Length: 176
Length: 444
Image (tube, rainbow over all chains, first blue to last red; front, side, top):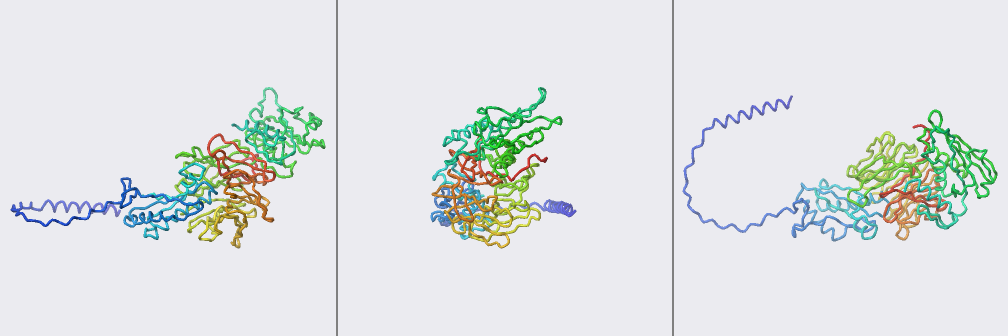
């Protein structure tokens, strides 16, 4: 009922506006103005507008080098502590997420196959939480972050040796 | 390899018990596994008229019984080729034939089709030494339950000889992953007989499935599914296939375990910040928080038989260890002290012994612990051993391990180390859960 009323009103309004336009007299042609050339001072060289730090797929780029920004962070066995080098990279992510509040990330936590599946499900969450906590401490809003643990269920390397395990103990940031 | 081939392979292994290690790959006979009780199960007779259907045309009853008894690790079975006679009725039994072969026990039987279409099986168990019949029984059921009849006979024979209730009529629940090493694996939740036969998929997903667990009535199951993109606890009715997402809180939803009375699920949730133990009342849906330790992972709860307390894994001391918490007092006690990784414990039905995943010299085994004496014994010698689950009579344990990089299931005797592998044609098999006792012959 209310919606119908609004619909009717808007039709009436549109009609009023349209008739108002039609009733206006045509504007007289403006008088031609003779332009006298003026010497304008050359503007100072403008700072180029910074390009958004994202590639064509909207994945993050290092704002300085414009190279893809590392988004996978590796962990020691049964640990969820971030490496110093990773914290420097995460600071850049935090900067981007502060500058672009419309962007958000999904942080996946993963483990290697050793140990029990359910313990690893919790350990993977601990890893994604370590990344999340850092980002929040660096000013990223909690609404910009989601976390999910896959435990040991989604290895990148299906092997059963130390090199495969090292690749699988990770947290991954996926921008949305 | 199909089940029949395996039966044959195991027979060879079982008969070759004098050799220190069996030839067949599927079976591992440990050192010290000597002179177990010797049993002959004679191929069952078929009391049929020429035009009657032979109920055993498709199911070898004696073969199933012999295979069951072999897998218990407590018996050595006589190969039928080596028998001197093939009695199927009491008046055909000559004990001399079995004494010569050094048998301790003899099982004979016969099957026929009733006018109603049902199948009847009669068996007799004899003590060869005393020349006495120990047990005899007639079982009638629908023809499609012939395998169930065979397992029932195994249960009864086992109990008459050992005094322990047989657990051959049970089922296994496990996860089979096809194309595990690819980008598009398929996860099958499967239910099979305890001998691996009659396996069927009860749920299939392209996302991970884990931690399947039986309700005490074996009519429904609980498990963790990633079908929504994150861990969710699902309860599924086995007969109807009806599923319900029972816990999908923010964070992880894991490790569901039905209480012994079936009214509650214990689980690990991180909805309040970190992985803690909760119980969920299935009728009222009331959630109760059991543990409070904000810096620790608390997971893998398992109930004591009286339903009064939970065993669980916690890394509150820095590394995962096993704890027990009384559900009234809520004050956890630490149970494991050896090693720096002890997880996913299960109590034996006697309540005094515990099995769990135990890391020793960087290798993951299954360990057994006597809670009163504190003694710890490594039960399995392979690497990456996981997910111990006990037969309801507490004699055998199934677990997941790896063979040449492929996930497989193995079963080990708690008492004597006798071990066998459950074959699966293809794929990665993991997360086994042994069912409670099941009465498959009662109509459902």
